[in-house]
Each structure stands twice: as C-alpha cells, then as structure tokens.
Image (cartoon, rainbow, N blue to C red; front, side, top):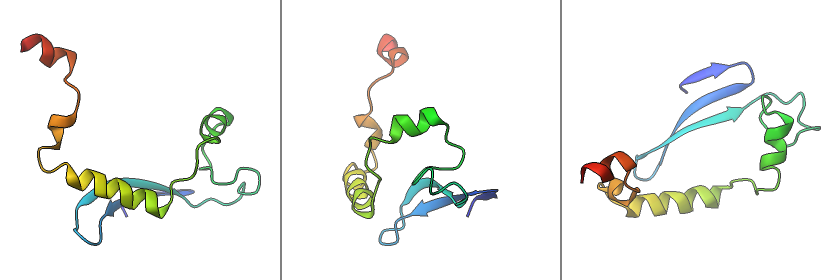
Length: 91
C-alpha cells in the first residue's frame, strides 16, 4: 500500500507471475453511498458518474488481457508511442 486516505487506498499493482509493475490502483473503501452510487468512488461528481456509467466495469479478464498486450511490447515499448510535435520538428 502506498497511501491510505479516508475512503480510499492507493496500492501498487504487480503481476504475481512475472513480477512486472503494472501501475497504481485507487481503491474506494467508503460504502456509505454504495446503494445510491453503485461501483463509484465516493469523490465522483454526478458528471463523473454520467460520463462513466455507460462503460462496463473492468474485470479480472480485462486486467489479464491488458497485461498480455503490454508484455508483448518488449523493453522498447516507447517506439509504439506517437511522436510528439517537438520531436517531429527536430527530425
């Protein structure tokens, strides 16, 4: 765990199989409004809820598929990123 705040835990996520760091997750722990706002962090506004409500929840399989995808990119993964305007001008 990286940090704990009221209603929220910030944790580092690492693959248990290959030990690669996968990033950071923010986990909501406050359940007081859970019936009114299912699957929403307590600090989300109505605009946030409306914006994300139509998207499906990320599940375990989604995380595994993302890990498989990122692990195939290799150590030179940055070559897949679009070039910035600044680096295009200097080329």
